[in-house]
Amino acid sequence: MTPDPMTRLSRSLLFVPASKPAMIQKAAASAADLVCIDLEDAVAPDEKAASRPNVVRALKELNFGRRTRVVRINGLDTPFAYRDLVEVVEAAGDRIDVIMLPKAGSARDVAFVDTMLSQIEAHVGLQRRIGIEAQIETAHGFLHCSEIASASPRLEGLVFGAGDYAASMRMPSAAIGEFDANDEIYPGHRWHAVMHAVVATARANGLRAIDGPYAGYKDSAGLEKSARIARVMGFDGKQCIHPSQIPIVNRMFSPSTEEVAHAKSVVEAYNEAAKSGRGAVGKDGKMIDYANIRMARALLRKYDVQSSK
Image (cartoon, rainbow, N blue to C red; front, side, top):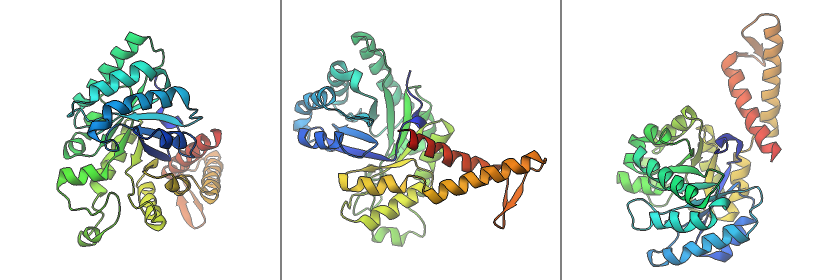
């Protein structure tokens, strides 16, 4: 069985190049909730084949602790993807939690990875089913987000990729995930539509939703702003491209002490009102009804998952 996606800590997803064993070792000991060993964008084409054994060795030899172990394969439009799956999963599938599929453009893409994983699992006798995360980072992915999200029971999450999405949409962008002059020209949030679609589709299908990276790893204020926007839009976490980003991202996607206390007080106030047959109650000058309770309980569930790890 694939674990319930919402029981995994998913605040920070750290990417590390498969071609850099020393960096993988540091990532395995980091404070990230998920560590993604990347065979795609972080690895040059002529290094991809040689990087697969690095992934296998890392998964077999390193202690990742509680961190979710993710492997990003190459896109299905390349000659590398199927060998990524065969060579890595056959050798270390029992150590992989999730396969990340980049540039998912249709349900068929997810179904292909699902079928490949099923074949490999049966061949090597794996008892635990490997999950899938689909990256929504193209125009096709945006338009087919709903079909992608329901394409496989293996699917655990949707991951937004701003860089490739900008390229696919021909949107000028100076840096991945950062704020530039183009954001000032457009009278709104340029990424709102696709980000909202990712979150809404994830919620409708019981999946986690992870926001894209922020390229300026020395720009703490910009990262915090980007993470704050993602969190208020409903994302569970954010990708990190450098270990220095992890503390900020973990903090931004963790319920604060004040938020937890407020949520508990809202639930308590509503429960007291319910005892007397009232469906709504006033608290601190604001009306509380069952919509407030659903929001409060969702926050407390997230806090409970974080506290249990």
